[in-house]
Image (tube, rainbow, N blue to C red; front, side):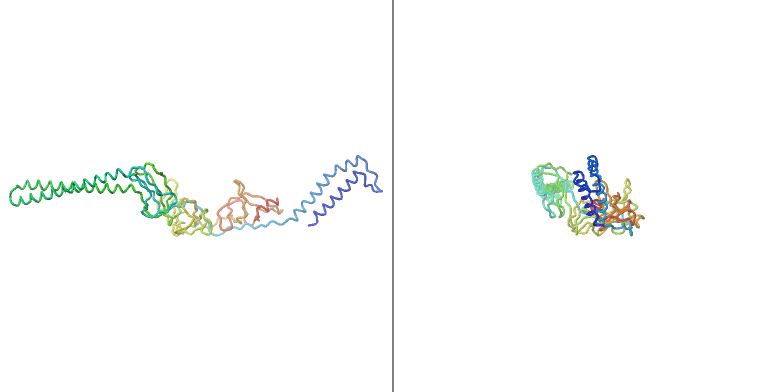
Length: 386
């Protein structure tokens, strides 16, 4: 009845006017005795009760006159049952470039986030001592070559003297042994000089491949020691997701898993189709899990190593009693997750549920709701109607 509130309001105004007139002795019908002061006081005390009665009659009518809540029935889930396994994005090619020699960092050209080419100089370590050692090695090589030339000529003279029988065979053999010793020393000096020159190249740290600098844990002036990490580089064109899955779920990885990247906005995400999946052939003895790797499409924008990801694997058909509802019907209050369900009297009741996976615009309800129950699609409207 749309006119019920207006009718109740009119009745309340008439009653109030009558009570006010009686209180002032301004309204005394001919067939009614004059109102006594005690009666007037009683009538004034009745004003709040009359107003409460009028409002109680008006409230149900106002509620009945409000718009109906939009509700949708909970649908039973059908098809495959997918299980989610948390993982992380990692680079297929990632290198931690470490120091091979000791020395102070005197030049630092790499910064976090820089794109570098293969062979590009990243930093330089103080190599003054190494340069002096290389120069000393070159001088020793020259001295060894001079000694080798002298030993070669001396051996040739001894051979001519032996042919003319001026020296004994034993003297020639001693001269030949001295030549071979000098030749070996010259070869050792040459090798030592080459090693020194090679080691001097370790003071220039270069990028092993083209990529992005993700970490630089040193600063200008720091002391680099053999084995200390200097720069971390990864190749952004080849990324994959690694997740530990139970060994019982490993056979399901024969099909390409579904990849979800919650941090990747549309249109690239959050769902991505991997190009290849691989299950490592070893099982972790402590957790009884295997490592599943899913390679992402090349040059996927917005994805970096360390991002959170999920791998969805099919584990049979959907469980009985699993239903799905519109994602807009979910209510999140602090640690409580629920939705509004219409009761038998049409009033919305807040009920706590346990959520499953999200599929498009619908979300799976694992417990707390049965198929066929009517769920309010607009939680805010349901909260106002309570």
